[in-house]
Image 1 (spheres, rainbow, N blue to C red):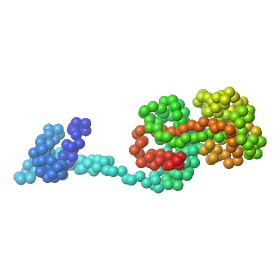
Image 2 (spheres, one colour; image 1 turned 120 degrees about the vertical axis):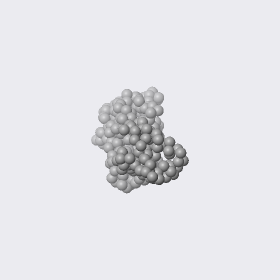
Image 3 (cartoon, rainbow, N blue to C red; image 1 turned 90 degrees about the vertical axis):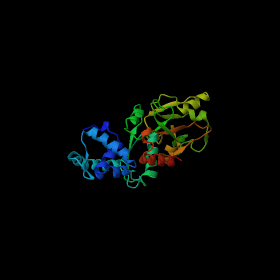
Image 4 (cartoon, one colour; image 1 turned 180 degrees about the horizontal axis):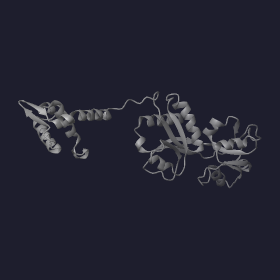
Length: 299
């Protein structure tokens, strides 16, 4: 018996129709080819299987015992192959299931949850979301298929042309204090801002923050009175003190209903976020639906 690798698909289909029709001319019409070409294919198949397959009986051709045993199995295989090659069912968010895994930072997780609950869950109620921490292994996790998307800033190590990057949003920073803070009703100069106690969210990037770069450009520096691991903790920390913390504006809009945004005399430079995914997911209808919903939410 020949191996699958030794026979091409055209010959498999020709064999199927030869055994179904038991007639070279009719099999040729099924394959949209000529009778002589089908005769040559039959001879090649006879050599390949070391069996006559079809033999003449009067004016007709009949199948050999081997061909009779092969015919039903080949018919099932061809039917299965047609099913595999058939156009997939159209994607329907309403009935879609499964879990979308997104790698995010603490801040981006808040955005992802808000976007999911606002734009995706109402349309795809059976789809689930799993958020995992964005870390050094995230780029390789995307290659291994362990996550669907990542929300990443610029200049992330390990991101190269093996990935697709799509601008997600541009974010600005705001500095916030507790409600009723002595400076909450006036415009605050950078020097007065620098003199406050500051709560810093430590991201682990090792880079100088936008706040410090801005202050350094004016010959100023600040005192970090408290370092915390998350934006949520930073918000909690300022509610019972006169300290200030600087956070992404969208995060404050979502989570900071009981804090006050300082009116600084100078803006703190913001940053951009991208959606990142492996090219294998680009044409996936489910993946495209999630990407477009996230991008639509971000505006």
